[in-house]
Image (tube, rainbow, N blue to C red; front, side, top):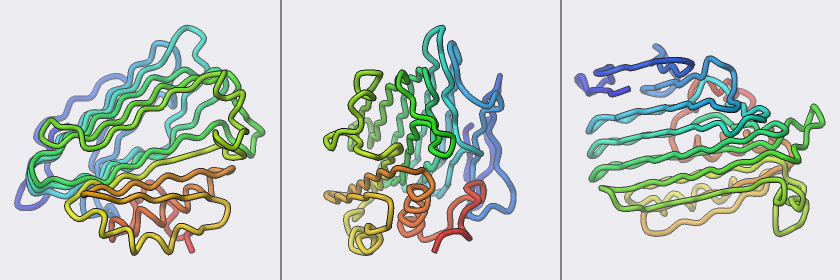
Length: 261
């Protein structure tokens, strides 16, 4: 999807959809402008390739999210692949806030996310991984994930994060140096001029119950990492932090604003 700036409002300039990958701009969203991506297949398994692509024009502020959690199912015939390409024009801002990714037993997912900023552009980025559903007693032992995230400004990397694990890592995930008792984890990244100044307002929120949260901020970058045993406390903490950083409510598809104290 390529957007254009029409008198300060987003309009679709180009839209290509095929297979299970869909994108739309809902009317009356909570945020000023929302793009919602959807995988109509309901999940990813062997041989699937899902690609989301968005271009935000200069001077526009947008929020992009997913309609629901992405699910990586058992993939006995090889990996599933997901690619996210995001481009943000000069002096524009994109909040990329997908809902969580759930890994089921024997899932095998390769994902790559690349967010490119032009001069003066900024972004808020979030990603959440859940290792099975605690309420269902799921604890994947054979799931595999390769997840590469990169944010560039005018072609130069300003933040990169790479994660890879499989059965060997999951076998020792209870150790303190790994996840401990946590079964889900997330990252929030703000890249903007003066991003480090947002840390002081965020720190009072870090002591939420049932969720460990850590914060770093330097040179126009702010990074929050979170982990929890259950996904609900983690998602609530994510929502608190994101709402503080955005200054506006979360996209309507998150459907949880009223549940946050």
